[in-house]
Amino acid sequence: MRVFRDITGPSLAPHGCVLTIGAFDGMHRGHAALLARVRERADALGLAAAAISFEPLPRGYFSPAPLKRLSSLREKLCGFVDAGIDVLLLLRFDAALVAMSAEDFVRRVLVARMGVREIWVGADFRFGHDRVGDVELLRAMQGEGGYELRVLDAVSVGDGERISASRVRGALGAGDFAHARDLLGRPFAMGGRVVHGQRIGHELGYPTANVRLGRRVAPLSGIFAVRVRVGGRCWPGVASLGVRPTIAGGGEPLLEAHLFGFDGDLYGRRIEVEFVAKLRDEETFADLDALRAQMDRDAAQARQLLAGTTIASGVPA
Image 1 (cartoon, rainbow, N blue to C red):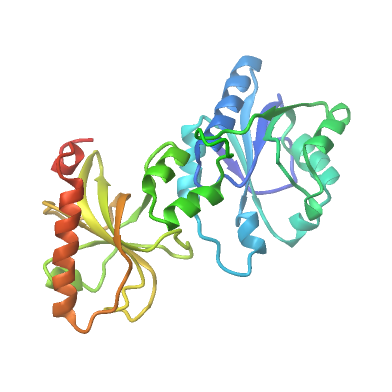
Image 2 (cartoon, helix red, strand yellow):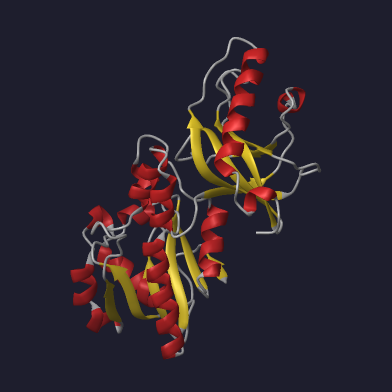
């Protein structure tokens, strides 16, 4: 996949493309359906499969509080690759883009920059200054732009409500991982590279693989039963996601995972932590002995929840 950031320049698909547009946070089942249709139509027409997305996310740009993200930029890019997208225009969502009219966006970005021949969006798609651009405007400009508009029916999970990133965030915040999995089409997971920590977990008998979140704000926090993928293997474990109030006093958010039965060095390696069940919220304990006692209870509960599964035994997934 080729990735571009500039809004101006020569056509990125000189022979034409089938295109979709969106924030694509979390790559849920609605996103997957849209990208699959783009890939399918691009193959049928002999054109490039293309997408336009944004960083930062539009909702995060306008929000007074940090947006809780379902996926990191890396995870989003991997989702586009897995969907078979050939060309991605990853636009900087800034004041200049916000001020661009919907008509200019069609002419300058969709037509001139992308060479679009077919556009796929959802019925509620909005774009351009003050979000005045919509399906009707795209339809009205088909003749001028030389493209055809296609609208994908809403994707739901049996309750009749459209799948959205907001619904996924709500499910995760409520600890409903089964519903989040239905919306995403896969278990919710967070990945990253393991870094050195304070080694307090090791001193307490629970060595952890630590992943920094950077500027990402996670959509959930607390203590969880997890499965951790390392290379081609999955290990059962228990994880903390938050600010570690007893140890760090509410400092930098961190994802810490203890892998049951694992004995090895993970520093510098990438891991993926799949969240299976929430055990409790973060708490502040009087001392490390009280914290260790609670960690013993958390580990026992996580083992019980994960027992009996093939993945929980640490065999290849």
